[in-house]
Image 1 (cartoon, rainbow, N blue to C red):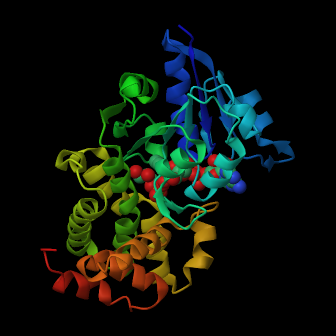
Image 2: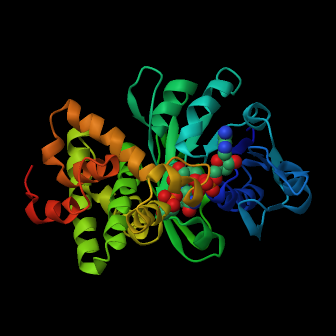
Image 3: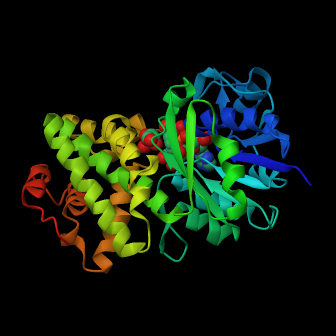
Length: 349
Ligand SMILES: NC(=O)c1ccc[n+]([C@@H]2O[C@H](COP(=O)([O-])OP(=O)(O)OC[C@H]3O[C@@H](n4cnc5c(N)ncnc54)[C@H](O)[C@@H]3O)[C@@H](O)[C@H]2O)c1
Ligand SMILES: O=P(O)(O)OC[C@H](O)CO
């Protein structure tokens, strides 16, 4: 049997963190090739190419300077060179770059390759259709794409603090292979075939975490924030029911669901961005470059795309929290509408 080759597209916080698990696991597997290619968006750091620094020191000084990568993880500045021989292509870049990356890769990868998206977001396809990132990858590269998401703050996993992740697997053949590829003693991975629900949970938490950050910025403290988490969780269930029917209730209680929601409402970058938005009174467009360099602000962007989906079905009023957060981002609602929404939201749909 041919050995499976794995590559990673991305070299940010999460890509670098998960590259260590992958790098170690392939060496310990009899089914995997030892070398793992990693696509690094080239940058010059102190006069040296980031790829050269990674390949000589095994440290990604830009994103994870305190963290040593296994030496079998090899950096390339060209995405095609990185992925052309791969049987498993792991995507861990911000949503904004996925489409251009797939266009570069189209026709230049193995036709039977399997993708795995570690990305939490939606994007618009060229025809304007709003797609989950794994669906965008499947459409553009014409290969199946599984997902790995969960309550996974990269720096905590890098420090070997225990965490759980959820794989939404789209090919039975890969159930065990993907679990073995990503897990470690401190990273427990649960695999399900409910892939859409897994990814939707991870994506909608972008909006809810932004709402939690608004509450933090307004100094509402914990009870109000818990109200946002509860309401956001409910709207997530209702959203999946409308747009991705057939998903399983149990999936919401995996790491991709309730756990990532809680973690994100306390510790992610959207929460921080929203808090700064309230406290500084500066526009989001000014703050995002400081707080989330290289990223679109995933909370506001996700809320906009979700709002388009809701509006199309006439459902804005049935999802009052998602709608209020979107309208606060655009300036159509004052901040006071956050609590008003919690006060008057109906529980039924
Ligand atoms: N950071 C985390 O803790 C964490 C955890 C789980 C999931 N995620 C998800 O992983 C994804 C990536 O987030 P991150 O935090 O690793 O990103 P990051 O902000 O740490 O890194 C940005 C990445 O974008 C790349 N990049 C910049 N410009 C580019 C371009 N023009 N073309 C291609 N790539 C470019 C950089 O090389 C880098 O890999 C997101 O969807 C995020 O939700 C992040
Ligand atoms: O800062 P974010 O939005 O990438 O969130 C970090 C992790 O995904 C939380 O699970």
